[in-house]
Length: 126
Ligand SMILES: [Zn+2]
Image 1 (cartoon, rainbow, N blue to C red):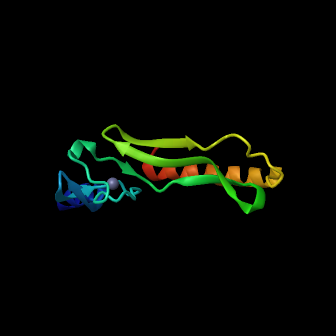
Image 2 (image 1 turned 60 degrees about the vertical axis):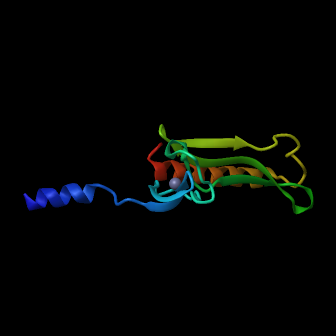
Image 3 (image 1 turned 180 degrees about the vertical axis):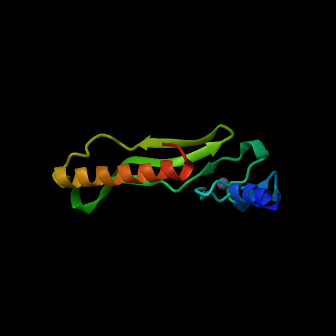
């Protein structure tokens, strides 16, 4: 019986408690392991308004004079509905300058795809 109790408790992940401000009151939130949100700085009025987010992974392409341009950005977000993958599209115009070779773009697309796959694995969404 002691063994069964031990295996049940080890199956439950430990809480990832992070400080937060809700309606001006300090409290602790059980965040997903991938959450990097500063819940103190992003204080909310109601606990139902808390949302979690991961760091973004960006697909940057080089432009003239070494300037990088954001093409795509992906991150995990979560609210009551559970984790979701949010993808934002940068300015899609004028990214095909002479500084962008097919090899560079292909390599960055592959690297971005792997980062998106890792985000999904971290949240259990594949
Ligand atoms: Zn969080």
